[in-house]
Image 1 (cartoon, rainbow, N blue to C red):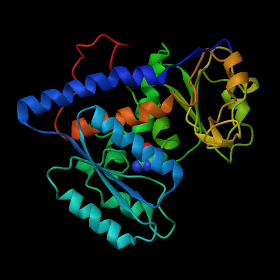
Image 2 (cartoon, protein in one colour):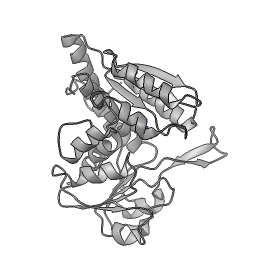
Image 3 (cartoon, protein in one colour):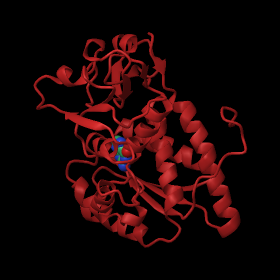
Length: 302
Ligand code: GUN
């Protein structure tokens, strides 16, 4: 492994200290405590663990979180009614519906029902549209965190060629849009399941974002030496030697990519902590606050 490891946990910890500073300021000056409602329908184990981590992060930042756990049989109408209630609740500044939803519920109908002013995931058409035209909006959390990680790697994005593998609404499409915006100014190629020869594109890339949901999607032979690799994958691989019976791996083969890349995010500890951090960032913004520089030196947060 010659690549630098981009430490998402450390970057997240620094940013969370600044967010906590913003929360404390908002409380002291305006008496407002940012409130996030987290809705989980059903008991998908990965979703349960994400939601638990989001609530814990809220508490650590001094925010209030309201957990709404609904059974898997919940009807779409009942879920929409819950969202309408939260849209009208002044103590709630952000609403997050954990995806995926059970198959009988339309994810898009649910997202469309969230007030754009409380859409801290940045998933509603209004926020996505604003992002596309460069207006102030809630940026989607994982793509926003990815931009911060590339900057953390010390790479100047402007003028570089970025290849995104995957075209999901949550990661692939928005991160491609963000990288191509004037603020980043990258040249962007999007590869997906219909791309005949993905390696042809990744070998020309200075930055590769892999968000395909499949282990081994990116291997070292597909990389230009020195490229920055952002691995968005979180895949559970059965492993009897682990207490939980599985281990997590990304979409990139860590060993072969680490031998060729200049910098790479680990899984876990890369993109994941940044997704939650940018959710806190958006929730603070939704409550009318902004980050303030931390009094605690970087790396010494509690
Ligand atoms: N499922 C996987 N990633 C996300 C995310 O960022 N937000 C929500 N709401 N659901 C997800």
